[in-house]
Amino acid sequence: MAVPSPGYSITLRVQTPVNFTVTSELAAAVGAAGAAVTALDVVESTHQHLIVDISCNTTDAGHSDRVRDALEALDGVSVRKVSDRTFLMHLGGKLEVVPKVALRNRDDLSRAYTPGVARVCQAIAANPDDARRLTVKRNTIAVVTDGSAVLGLGNIGPAAALPVMEGKAALFKQFAGVDAWPVCLDTQDTEEIIRIVKALAPVYGGVNLEDIAAPRCFEIERRLREELDIPVFHDDQHGTAIVTLAALQNALKVVNKKIEDVKIVVAGVGAAGNAIIQLLKAQGALNIIACGRSGAIHRNEDYADPHRAWLAANTNPENFSGSLHDAVAGADVFIGVSGPNILGEAQVAAMAEDAIVFAMANPDPEVDPVAAAKHAAVVATGRSDFPNQINNVLAFPGFFRGLLDAGAADITDAMLVAAADAIARRVSDEELNASFIIPSVFDPHVAAEVAAAVAAAARTN
Image (cartoon, rainbow, N blue to C red; front, side):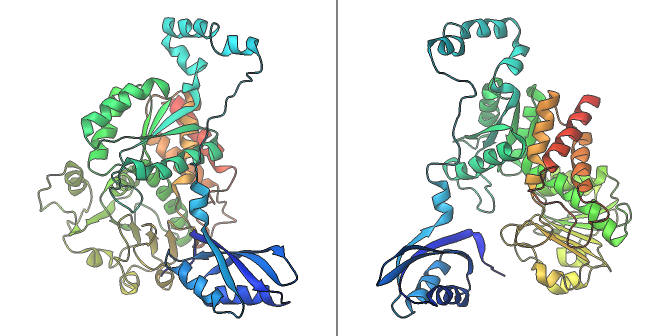
């Protein structure tokens, strides 16, 4: 199911003979090699040759070699250089620190730094709550990871996780004006992570836990919430749950079903799966079957993991004990937060009429969306190249904006639901259809409306 993706975007600098049709021939060769042309520019011209930059999306790293070979097969064409545009974007990192105040002369320096800054330090020492008013704490969060569960890459460590955390911080700033900083810890010891985050907490107004493997992430979040006076949010859990609930609310409108009446099968019982199930239950879902690698979680088995034990006690009312494929038969909703290609077209065809399929594994979903759409009424993925992208970017920037604006110390289910409702409402009844159940991450109103809803819920709490 591999299709060209901006994540594998390349630019080829090509020398060609002078020819009126050369640019169209280059574009045709790239297309014939299975890539998607995104830009084509003549950057140099002489009497004898042209230098052309042709940018295209490919399917994987090896695909760029096939594109290069296709171009060099043309008469008189040579490829001078191939640049990976994704790596170029990351050169030197994606973040920088920019002062908010002018430092033009000794007068400015005396107020921003010594001796004037000492007065501000003394004020905070006398009243620690003033740190939120007089420092970066009021608008800054830590994006904390141990690198143990990064994207779909697994346990790749803190240094390799840093590009993801930088990207997360950039999204916070871009979409909600929140200053965020990557904190990548070179330890995967639960107690040490808790100690370090607690020691760092005076600098920050909130903590966003990211890409920490289950079940360790549950204990880290629980303890930090108990022991800190700032909100702690695990995006892999709660961000995913918020956006999933928002999408499901609108998908159920499309098929004219109610959450309390539908059978929901969730594939994946890690951080995201647990949080999704808990939020769906809080919204009235009564028939949820959670499936791990060995099939349905049910009450006839003892689970050492307390989170699976909770699922066994609080889901699967008919105590079904079969496989995932058997569970989805007759189901109204499938939600996948697991791995690629665990369902086929036949399993989707066996679901209930007007079924809903959320296949959110990235980069390859649980079922081919094109195949699923032959049988399901609504299909959503985590990918940007299909309709209905269920993307955490819709939730976490605005969510933290609301927490910081309200000076919140904790996170409640009411805040999660308020955020989901705000996202769902961005799709009006006039806009709603099977291919548009969730707003774009670039909708300029989403973050502000999520922030307002979360802040209102926090102040009510």
